[in-house]
Image (cartoon, rainbow over all chains, first blue to last red; front, side, top):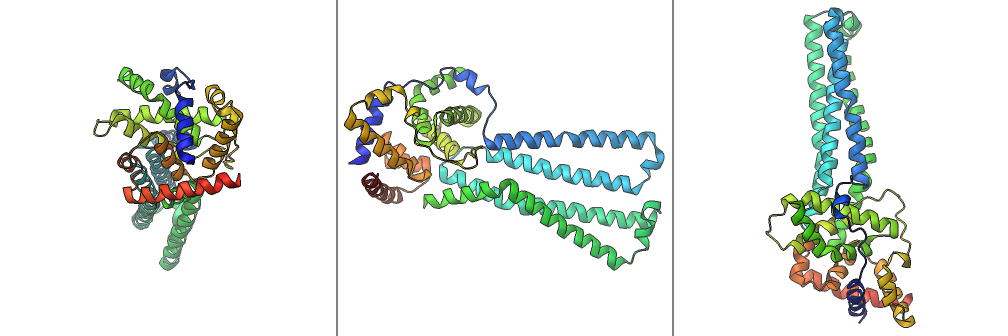
Length: 198
Length: 161
């Protein structure tokens, strides 16, 4: 029988096998070379510009009173914060995807669920934050006249709301595209592996 | 903790070797996979509370790492490469008939899917169905059915190779 023969051969051959690398301690001190580890590293590097930009904003706000009262600057800061949250979210997801614990079935289910749910959760958070930003912008424009937004404030409310909706739809499409680009193939592979279990 | 981990790994190094042997595409890939498995074992080691046997836990982490890793080379081309067998394996199969049989069987196993390979791997290591269930999360009756299918598949594949 084929499998028993292979078992016998493997047993006898691995009795005298040569270890791939004796220095286990040295190996575990290296960084992971896997594709997910590379993606996590790339995302980590992508996180650094955000605090730097926030510090720059803070410096500008402290030194320039006009900049501090500019609604546009606060909006840019808001967008920066939302995108930072998004990237942080994805970084956390990649870290979780590297977890190899549990039986193969448990591990695959956990990873597939995480990947399927995280986009919805992430988009909902982004959507709420952008919607909140639009509301804050509307309220601020009402109480505080800003030269940069005077034209926008004069635009009919219906048009303004339509623009916010279009902005959110574009956000959804862009986020979905990048999410698919980053995790789509991995999700497909995990689902394929899960099918093999049954 | 490092000392305890090192002792355990040295005791179970053969199993890691077998997993790499099954899932790697060539010698360089085998080295990469070996390092990745060791790293994941080391990272997960603080969470090992001894609820299962170390061997079972090791297999869970190693198989999950091997089957879910994304290779950097997108094509994932599997090249059957006798060089990535250890010198000892090659010596063992030096006898012409044995070598041919080993070559044929190994080439057949290469064509199985990732989960089937894991089942074959655990069978070769002498694991019981209960142990396989704990590692893979596949119920015992399903495993038995799968094992029969794998045997049949290997029979067909060895005939066609």
